[in-house]
Length: 308
Image (cartoon, rainbow, N blue to C red; front, side, top):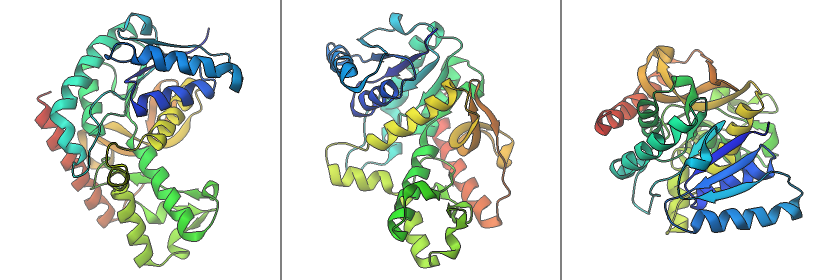
């Protein structure tokens, strides 16, 4: 039986995610949005691309959730996007209502699904989706760590003039300005970047990673990033649907790992058919732990502010 992937939100992130998931051959896609005609139109457009790119999967657009029943993965992208001068946290109040309502409608129809949350502020929205869905924590996951690590990898490759395929990086903590890139765990062909790049330049790359989303918002002026978030979401969906047991940095609910409880934060996890099947704990230095705790505390404040 073919897998089913629901993508909620047919804006730039959602539509691009639907396209990537479809073109990766992961299964059939349902694209949902509240705006009448938009998911149907984008779904039809994507369907008409399948003969050209040689895809056998189907995609449909809808304004309701009936067609999403029995989804294997639900990707939530619905919500307001950032504008110049806005932080991810500025979106909290409006997006809490949206993500809560999406989860209330989608989760009961697909009780065995894994939910991937993309909407900002992402860690807090994952917490909202967890509380509303009642799902086990391992089946409600935030996307930000994959995206943040991809940005760090990109900047490392640019700095050294090497293939991005040779770069590997970990970014821990919340998906915000207090995220914690870990240079000593970031490598180029297995070589730590601390042996290849000066501390001054590493610090600059870390700061650019932390503000990577704001940099794109500032350049676009009328929207926020969507190609990289969509690619990150699709990579996570693939790891889950194909039971890859892939180690990726994702935002998950911590219950004592890394010294934190009752909070979503980015950590290395093993993604498989059960969702975030295992948290991989690495020993942090005192400075790294302090940075991680600070980032987690910022997420906790946002979680409290949601009222859930």
